[in-house]
Length: 116
Image 1 (cartoon, rainbow, N blue to C red):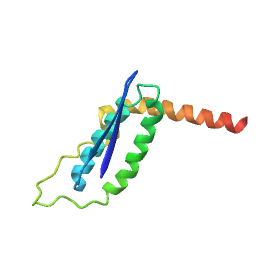
Image 2 (cartoon, one colour; image 1 turned 90 degrees about the vertical axis):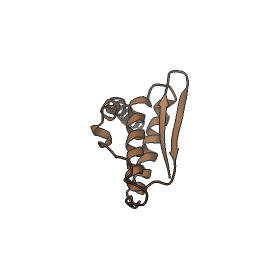
Image 3 (cartoon, helix red, strand yellow; image 1 turned 135 degrees about the vertical axis):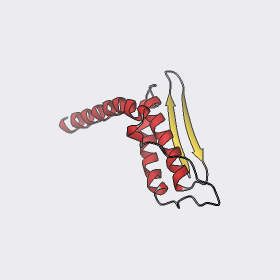
Image 4 (cartoon, rainbow, N blue to C red; image 1 turned 120 degrees about the horizontal axis):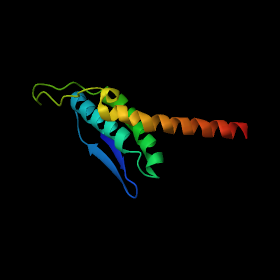
């Protein structure tokens, strides 16, 4: 399974990923960390305005696969702590501002195209 992240910077950007064989708890912990960091750090470049929403959507499809994974067993250890859900983390809350702005601009463009 691959969980993706993105960091946008003014001139350059970084695409991040974590590949591995995860149990459900560990995959959820990695997903929440990558998703909240992407929401806060992914928007800060010209191309990142397009890449960040795509990365967030890809991760949502990955989340559906994560929910189907087996729980950790005692043979492998307790697993990682998943922590707070994405929107209850500080980075996730900060990331709502640019995400909302992106959605509004996207809707305005759709409306403008529909009325033209």
